[in-house]
Image 1 (tube, rainbow over the protein chains, first blue to last red):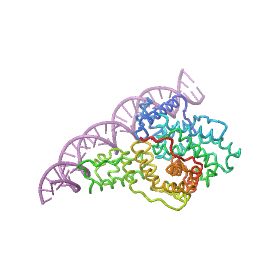
Image 2: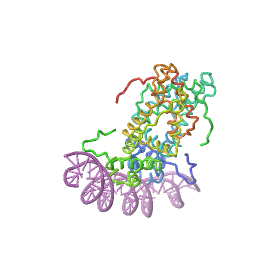
Image 3: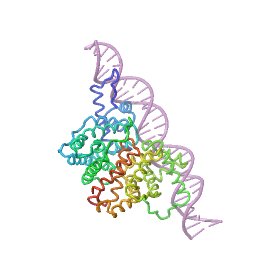
Image 4: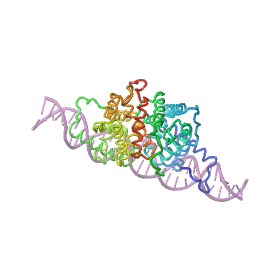
Length: 207
Length: 207
DNA sequence: GATTTAATGGAACTGGAGTCCCGTTATGAG
DNA sequence: CTCATAACGGGACTCCAGTTCCATTAAATC
């Protein structure tokens, strides 16, 4: 994902500026046209950057989106801390709900998910992105486990993912996605966790 | 979705044969190349059909996939009936798990979902497809509600969807999808339903 | 501030997806 | 069986995404 910076590389000044401009242009293009209608020539025009540059540095739409994801993962936003498990999970659920229905972020995420479903590298970048998000929120669950509110075997990451899953499923099927669904998602996750269903995965398949 | 068959139409013989050939070719092409790399010219070649025909009747990749979904929805497969709610939901969960990890169906579904995330009409076709699937399995839940095993306000459709959601979420993020995850999904759905979380949606937006 | 060489940009080129035109096939009606 | 026409097929054409080549710019090092 993060290149080890080959010897003689020049990440400074212009290169960084070009990357930022292209990523922002890609974002705009994805929001307007979606994943299927995206072409790198258009991105280059928007970014006021040579078409050749975009093709040389990224090459494919999928690679560009993967880089965009890496960039998004870098700017992590802090979780809420309401003091209670329910409060935190509700905050998380509503954050996801708002993100997926936001006029800018919604279409952007749809495009990114479509790319991840198409390309393995993009999927890996997406997983990395979510891993950082999950790691950010997992402490809320861990606190509840330590406090005896949830079974000891509970896997915090699974609980966080259980909150998101139904919301993303609605996005996939194009079903309406209202704040009430966020409530439902958070409460369902808590119920499953209390029942001891969300324990560690059966085996660790590395990679 | 289903055209009302305009006056003077000729759905007989050749037309139906062409449609079948094109849909099968589209399936193969989607499995091999994925959604992004699909072009109608290639589909036409595979189906041994005039390129013009494909462009005239479907026009876009998304429309072709939407038609493929309509075709898939038409052939509904029967649900299992094990006698218990847990047994039925486990059967459903494992059916979904097997489908999504099948060497043919898996890539096909990924491609279809990518298309649905890109195009509104495809999303509508997908929703219709899932509605038939959900309606097929909902009776298992309804029986449990009538038998007093689940709260009266439980929405059967929501329970079925709650089983699929985490499995599709794993597909989205490219996480491994094992039979154990199917067990977990079914049991989580039951726990949430028992807790009374999976009740009817807040309001019916009749689109 | 001179030098080296990544990295970018412009312009010409190319291949194939998508369109158009028109002749051919075969379905459905009488 | 005949006729009208919906639907299909072949081939030429267009257009633009993606590639290639080379000149230009500006980081990095001294």
